[in-house]
Image (cartoon, rainbow, N blue to C red):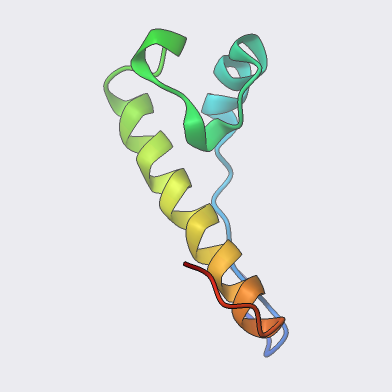
Length: 69
């Protein structure tokens, strides 16, 4: 894995196992539910993905000097 630079906002994991579920459900990968087929290990990956994207959004807001609730 390459070293992140000063301009790197986040290093996101490849959540490729969630993509087919997200496309079928027509939802973002971080909002999948068990009803969409995200069971067991997939549900844990959804939770990790949600935290990764939430952290990225907060970093972007901070860099843009936007206050989030």
